[in-house]
Amino acid sequence: MGRTFELLKDAGVVFVHDVAAQPWCQLTVRFLDPDGPMIEVGE
Picture 1: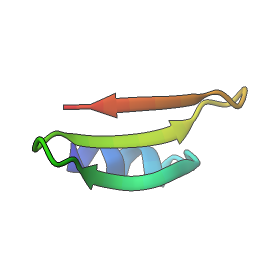
Picture 2: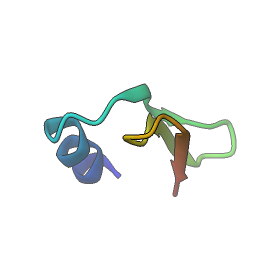
Picture 3: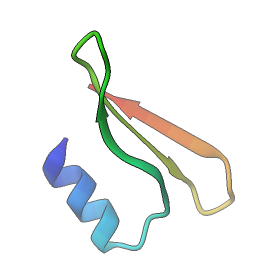
């Protein structure tokens, strides 16, 4: 997820928070789409 995060960040995507490790060992990140709704991606 690190490379994808960096690509999105370099493209100017607005993030709600950086990549976070959840207690169950899943990595998640939340960001805003251009229209405003929040998107969460987890791996």
